[in-house]
Length: 106
Picture (tube, rainbow, N blue to C red):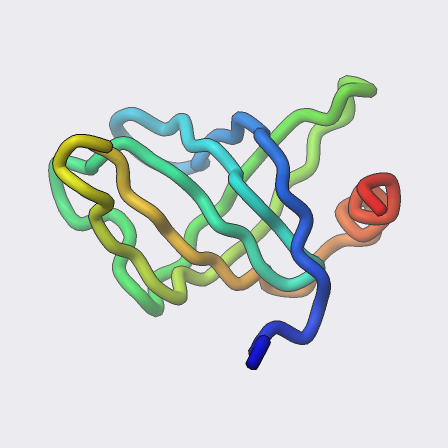
């Protein structure tokens, strides 16, 4: 049974984690009005702790930037061959420009 309340959209977007000190680039695999699934390189320390807050920024094809405040919901290491981590984020109070962007994906 599907637990998600809103539709997920598969995307391939490069994003930047704001306020970090090393390797700030991440990739958005899918997103919805309230959540994001990220792929990131394995951090040297535990940067994605469930309950912690992070900010993301990504650029649209139009050149406009969207900044999102998020809470980490879950994080785990993918296979050793993959060398990436998966991170689930909950978006805190999604801004209108983000909601408008989602409408373009439907």
